[in-house]
Picture 1: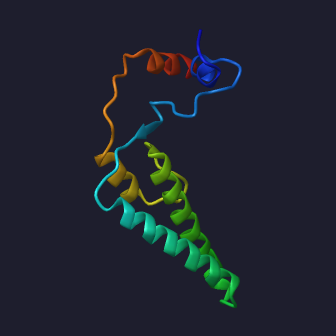
Picture 2 (picture 1 turned 120 degrees about the horizontal axis):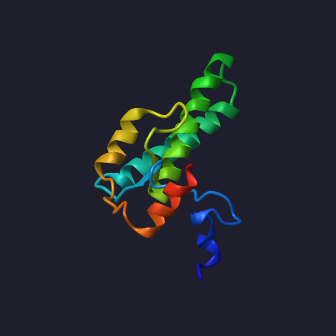
Length: 120
């Protein structure tokens, strides 16, 4: 019997499995990852405080985009899972960088076949 946390892999009660291996890929850690995390953290915090300060209205959108990109990059680096197509308004260069460190998986194992059947 499958554990409750894995029930959604074969269309159980919990919905679709979030890590569908045909939409997402996992990647290994890489050299410079800590530097990228720190850069994203600094960019996110500094942009947030700039947004709260009295900046002109036309800077709200670029600062919001910087916060979005840096927060999403921190999330992706923490989970080590990324979409193949990338995310909304997310730089393709970062997705390409993560793809270079992609984990190779066997598509014939049970979990991959179960998620393939869910996509119909």
